[in-house]
Image (tube, rainbow, N blue to C red; front, side):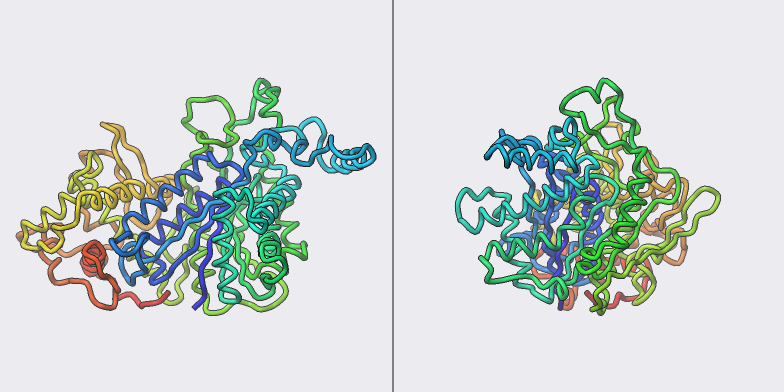
Length: 550
């Protein structure tokens, strides 16, 4: 079985990774262990911080007394094991703030300084690109970004090889690379990033070669990665959001002298796709490239923000999630689950269309993951089950307004003579409840705060997305009265009810009939609890038993 690796680059890559983590949470990666690397120039990036916290929360839910981060399970929630590594190129240290300082254009012999300046001026504007602050990324300067990202990874390799002044982020990169090196030809590496912006667009072309060279430098030539055999895949994610143009006041600010202008994103995307189609290095490095785009007017990423300033990065960059990021995560699912990948010397490009009528999209599960091996049915079942669990915890048991949620549901089970989960402690209940808030929604007093799935749904509104519109209510009173068993538009998947009991009450009473099985590989009380819920909701939804596959 191939070993799975995911690399998320830049703000867009982090949001794609967020969708990937949620696919893991609903149970789409059975019995798999995934090595995850976040790669950025901006260690304070808000999207980066959000997804890393999400993975840490995921791992708190998985962790047991004997295994940090838990173990892989089968056909249950949180079935994959995730190992997180973080690397960033540090531009906050004095002398590393911009290209001019990193390249040391004013050091060395006079003739060397002259040659370096002439070469730099040929490719990089002297007054803007060579001097802007790099802390918030490469700002659509991909020619600069590719150079500096490769440089940063090589610098880390040399530091690790020398064993001196190794920074924590360099050590984490080295740990990730050790796993990749050990996997050899069994490695499948999927890279999330955009092709129209800064960090992701800069890194996707050079990353396979940079990883190969890292291994060679770190091992002093004793080891390498064969790019013709290691299987790389990536998203070619073109423009799908826009933001306000920077005003003159911001442009004359030296720190912001170079700012990505969203009006150029369509042109950037076209140029990038031409490059990926013709570049021989990319063609040799990747097996599959997934072209993902947004064919209608781009969404405004900064809509509703109080600041008039164009956000270039940092903690303030916390963009809402978008359906294209879920499509990218499903591309990773496709890449990891293909029975075989082409061994040719040229990358294959994949794309598909989604129905669009009356100015709206209609997304089905098959549109996201296809229909082979019943993948669409599996996704619908698992997504529906997790969404049902979110409503059970957050609305039916008050979790969205406080810390009750899962704990209150366990107390309800106890009152119904299902008391084997009463030993699950409050901290474990809180972790599960907090994850469900990230996934679905929460309330800050009376203010509704949409989570990931609501944001995905909002990005295609008024189009349809898997569930009926009532499932996405943002009104506290309506959510409290929501029939959790009727989330799907297709009535075949509604929970059964009796003449005397609601669907929810019938579900609770039938829980005892759907105990976890040995095939699910669940061992701790917490794992058995999650598997028990998964089984009961799946049975209630009326889906056929899921095929056990990775």
